[in-house]
Picture 1: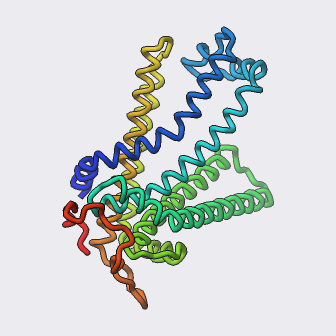
Picture 2 (picture 1 turned 60 degrees about the vertical axis):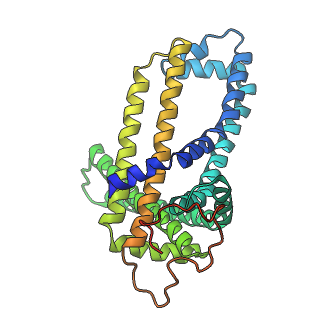
Picture 3 (picture 1 turned 45 degrees about the vertical axis):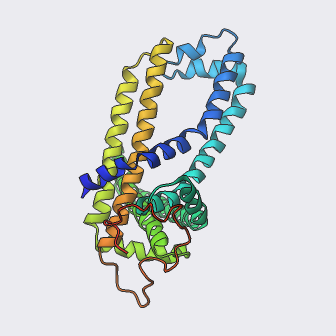
Length: 316
């Protein structure tokens, strides 16, 4: 299944290119503004060139001391760019899901993204709340464990033991975080397939669905995360080998960075593709009232009714 969905994802090259451009364009104005300001404010400073091979805090601190008034506003703009990129990715999810089950067109992509944006945004807020609550629980448990260990008479716990407890807590947080994000993805698929608008209800049903089919859902989601981690490690390895002392090497590093960004786009679409097929092929938990598998009247219609994709993998 993984190889088949991967090849089908690569065939959606129009969609992949569009998503890559949607990822690149929000950051491009900020990057160009930062580069222009850095060039004009540098005034012949060698600090930017000295930090190309690797980050040097002393050089950075001296440079920010002299030119911080012009740089800090751009850094704050960068944070807003991150928020904008996140909102665009949430908006695009509806268009991706529709394009994977129908023929791709820019018009229907825009319509589907706009139609499902509100419910996906609510789902993002709900997911963020669950992540925050789980983090607070782990922090409180960690504080409680630390206090109990301090109260134990003759406590001989070493620093290595405290580090081990901290590492265990981080492992539990990471595992639960992946579980929460996996459930959120299946909830977004369910909200699309069954035209569900209640994020909490969709999340609860998806939580049971993922638990019932852990190997096919959570296992494959975890595998894709491992693939992304390996790609990130390869990118960081190549980046460390680049001693960007000239414009040619800087250009090659930029191409490498964009290749990594494109690989992330492919992984995201691939993951949604797998979630769609699992949601269609695997039985859902029995509910008292089960809505139809697809809305009777889809809110988005293809631009050309005669041009429809092969939906054999997505039976209605």
